[in-house]
Image 1 (tube, rainbow over the protein chains, first blue to last red):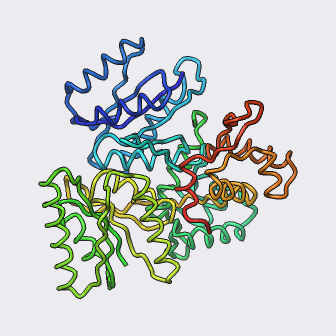
Image 2 (spheres, helix red, strand yellow):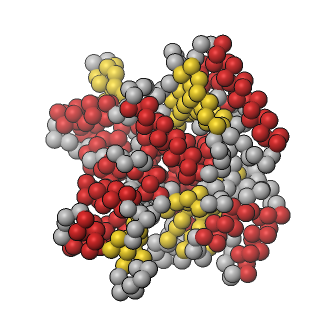
Image 3 (tube, helix red, strand yellow):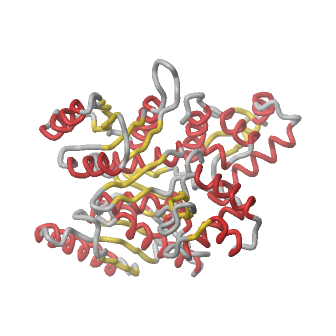
Length: 218
Length: 220
């Protein structure tokens, strides 16, 4: 089963049909804003899908917070990237040319986060330079990834030695320095203890690592 | 330096100049659908307003008019080339505001920010809140091996000429089996594809995906 996930809002009929023509698929999943009404274009696309024997799936995302949108989109991609009954992997492509600017940008970020095939289908079809399967975890060593995932809402360096199962404090201190240099973690002394916390980018990396660590990752 | 994209609303860009300390220069990209006179006028007004604001604040400004603000690929290539040029000149890029402009312009700018590791902000179109996007730079140098990059660069340089595996091996002075191994990896990563040779159906030619040009940017 091949799945085409496309962002959409009223007025994007041509962009979505362009993607439907250019990208081979079996099932169409449209991602729309929470407040998108059931418009004539949506009904028309639904009917086009019915003719092919597949039902169009509509997924709605809340647009109040950009990063939550990215999370929601990643969730939608992961959900449709596998067969619910058998758990088998499905070929999935993403088109980001529809929807609001915010939704399209969130979809682009989600594509890079998950390393999935993504396109911008308008009058021209542009394939985005996402390397399949390349995700946040490729950027870090196993120990660095474990460190980021272990920080959570913030903890002491001693806790991190325990949580990462490191061989002592020294390797953890080294990783702390490396990740601090990349702007992923902050550290301060509180009551004689070194307290480590994630920066905004670090938190984004942690959630990207969590997503790509799931067994359902596509 | 601050980079940005601009549509009808100067207030989607100006707050970023104010929130950054010591901005020396603003570079922004704008453009409108030329068949829509109303849009052309609105973009021109917004452009002038931003230029006037910068002049009064004694900030150097470079307003770049995009020929086609809906041409995603060429906008991305243009922005990436400009960013790299400024980096080479030793300029520090403080932030890229991707809030304004057409949807392809904004998405193309976001793509470049991901690839170049440029700090990115967004002005929410409902709340007008400046949102810093915590982007993780995609380190393709770690995802692609040196040999893979060498192959991709060669294929990009010679993309108008059909190249077979054997010809590629000869050109890069590598064993055919080595090239075959790397090509299989590159196909799996979605950067190249194998197609039937135009004049000899027994052979296959290696075609570089168009997106690879966006991925690698100008030849390093």
